[in-house]
Amino acid sequence: MKKIFLTALMLCGLSLTAPAQEVYQEILRLSRKVAADKNKSLDARKVATFKVDELNYMAMKTKEQMPDSSVRVLDVQAYAMYDFVNLFMRRLTEARKKADKEKVMTRFREASINNSRFNDMDKELVLSYYDNPNYLTQFSLDTDWVKALAEIRSKK
Image (cartoon, rainbow, N blue to C red; front, side, top):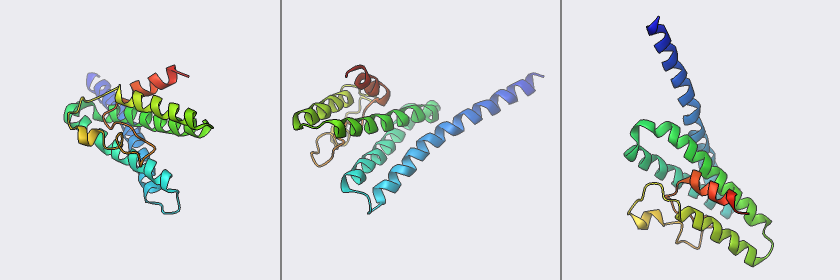
């Protein structure tokens, strides 16, 4: 009886991790598709490129530092990053004045840099988008997206 119960629990655990991995993979797949689509605007492709680079960085660092929990953690962080970037783009679009757009940029950049996840010392890599004025998504790659999103949502 115990064997059947344990087997059932293990199968439930496997079925719970599969969708999590599918969320990360789906965001990565969609972002790659947009990044490669020459029919999309340059800004849309750059945002998608950021997402791809962030997801790859996130997976690499998560596997290094948390190999046992990488699937679930990747799911949560990937979805929060996706939400964060989309909320950023929406608020940036809603801002009419240049000063309002700059406020949006500053708030999101600060939320990104103030919520480090890995405390990665490779600042050249981590800040490659943050320090690049050619990208709308000037965010740190080393971001705890759940915390950054919560910070943004707590401020109007």
